[in-house]
Image: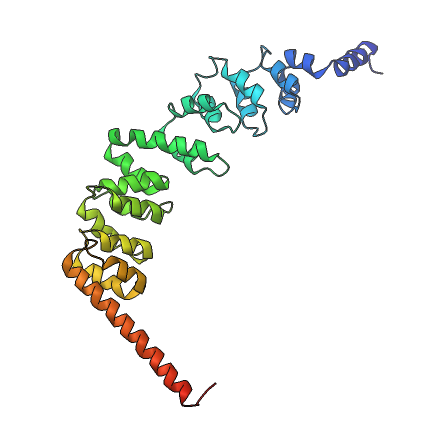
Length: 284
């Protein structure tokens, strides 16, 4: 038979409000309260002497954690000294903006890359993580630049491509996150090394992108042979635009004009042939 006092104690524990229990809970009871949806209970847990950094990490893993609880966590300097908690706060969608920015400045390089590429992270936070990476680029050793070129976000890979280091350019161009927009920005940068232009012009992917081809033709570092190889794929309107005075070197401009005229004549010939075919009565 159960002891009456034990039953009374168990009943009393159940009757105590969760907010008060949170102040003194330990072990499994504390762990259960970490998943409470009540803001007051979570705030009370933060005052519990038994509440540890590991418990803070469990809270910050909850994407629905209320902003008020996060703001209270941010006031505890002893918790902000732990790297894992800094990273968790930087990534959390409800962390105050200024706190997130401060935490990002203290994160390791590849953690910034992870945040910049992580699905579900806000666009602003991704942008800020990229900004931190870009700020550090000038001081980074070559090995880390190669790693960023291979795995970094598009904006970072584009900047590393534009720098033109021969060991970084190939991996940056093969970066799965690199976009045509960033390749175009690299080509448009003042002083971009000729080696970068040539590498893009011969890359199996980027040399086939239509807009990249247009940019390459406009770039004075692109060889005449490469530019001529692109002409058959261009539209007549783009050929005419590029053939305007002052857009490309004069030798290339003559080829552009000739290609434009060839296309026009071919179109006129085709149209005439179709008209004759219809006049012949062979089809309706």
